[in-house]
Amino acid sequence: MPDTNIAEKTREKVLKAAKQLGYRPNLLARSLRMNKSNIIALAISYLENPFYAQVVKELSEQLRATDRHILLFTAPDDNQADPALAKVLNYQVDALVMSGTKASRELAISFKKLGVPIVQINRDSNYPGVSTVQGEDRDAGRIIGRHLLAGGHKRFGFVSGIADSSTSLFRLEGYREYLQSHGIDDVQIAYGNNTFEAAANAVRQLLGSKTPPDAIFCASDYMAFAALEVAKKEFGLKVPDDLSVVGFNDVPAASLSAHDLTTFSQPAATMVEKAIVLVDQLISGQKSRAQHLIVKGELIVRGSSRQAVS
Image (cartoon, rainbow, N blue to C red; front, top):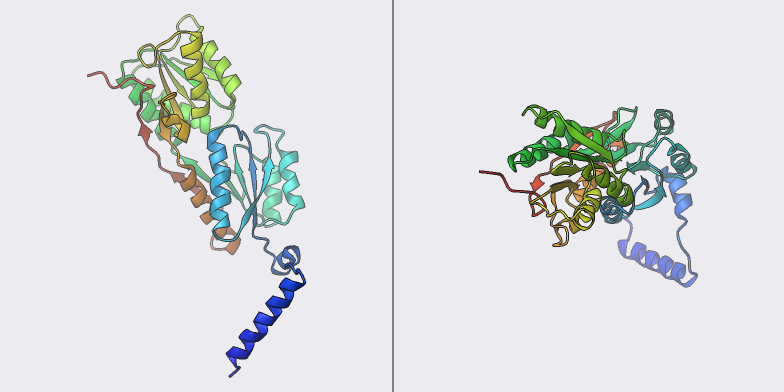
């Protein structure tokens, strides 16, 4: 049996010599040898939106806890995202996580052929090899519709993100579905494109119409903040007496007194945690097909919306 004391002494000598020589392990060489880099690519849009900033923070911290890291790519949320996303293939990464952006079907197939799993956070996908982690978009829309209708509202608006975004579409579907089941067919829609400025313009459009809504559901908290500012400062409306505003995500700023925003929660930490589990399962081969997970949330009622009319 080998002498463990001698082995340990040898190890200490090697480490001491390496330290004196300033040796650093070659991580690239190790990744090539093991076919694993411990680096996850993150492609993301809308970093000014607090929700996506939370995704970056959570993914970085949760991966660091297992001695892994992210390689960050910013990409637009439109049909021009592929050139930015294709750059990921220039690096040795173990997987690609996307949030707030999407790859084309053709590019998703390329990643699959190369054995690089893709996990999409906060977006639906039926592309080959693309797994998803989403919130309760349709159910949330129904719950918000019920909440606003119970508050005695008569005219309803919706501020969408990108027109073809699955998250906005599903939230709108649930919202409309509930209202239609109670005899309300008209929901005024304007597009905020996930930015503060565009959302402000969308709210101006809604509130400047001949029959402005007295309740607006925004597809994100960030756009809801724009709605509150425009409603109060430009139209002189009292919230929630004249207008109720509801957001989506429950980012930390939503609870501040300046906003006091009613919103549907979508916990970024939990979504990222589930995304990492999927990444690990796909890398290890425990899962061979794309997986689709739903993270539950809840309506957080604050001062920006009316309470139920008794």
